[in-house]
Length: 382
Image (cartoon, rainbow, N blue to C red; front, side):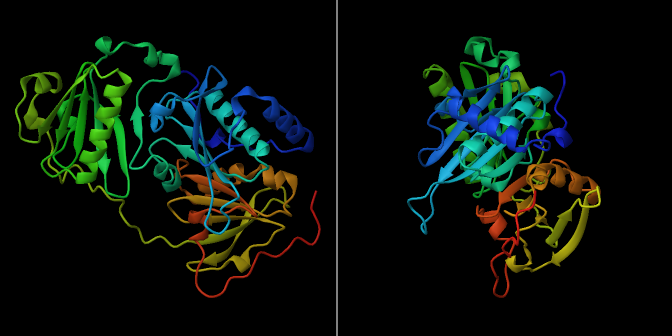
């Protein structure tokens, strides 16, 4: 897709002046796409289509296209405050989404944030590097397909589908479904693969495939049949079974790799040390000073400032209520700058947490000893 999005540009820096905020709030309150959004517990999904926010069909929740950008709102309550709705807002960027689509997704996420009283925790999600919070919304996994709104994918009839091979991989904790090249060499005996030929669907279970992978594959094939009004026929094969039609599409079965070559289903643990940084741009350039390492508590947070926590799996940007408007608006820019300086991948999930909001992943970064509440701002900075 032309004008592919640059991850380093997928932030909301530059937004946040009072006039801009007022305009966004007014727009959000009258925008048709946000009517009724966040009024009850559950998830809501929108796709960016021709620069507009369009509701995504509920029966396709969990399905994403690599050429698109999506917005996902998760409304939930806690046992401590069962009457209060809390929110997470994720903007998801496919690897081939356009810069314009990514920009609309980021901007509209801010607009939705304003509509919900700036309560949501915001997540920037990049295809294949999604946060755990995002993946849990579509338990036991998400489905990633090639194409997108510009490709006219949804207008293609099942009979005309070019065969697609989907790779189902993961553990009980999380399973991902992603499209791979439709050849036998893409397969391995440790995972499950789905060959979608339109009206003929094959589920191939590797000899060492996990139960969670088989269950997820069953769900995917059932969903495809439902979307096509029950017309497709589904055939389930084991890793050693011969089927001329199946291998006729994928080629030589001897090209299938071993389970070992398929890699571990679970994430590999790393000996990463969590770090806490205080962020300041008072000198005119972004400066960060390390204020915590390994085990640290919330008493290190100051309501007047912005802090970054590097937990390896995700990057958290905590914005104090006393931070000035530029600092509040630049949360994602700070994150991108930090990732670049630290030599970390720009695809690392980034989470913005405003003081007063909460997030389980963020909370899990703190521990050991008693932790105090963040220092209250002495005076609001402007």
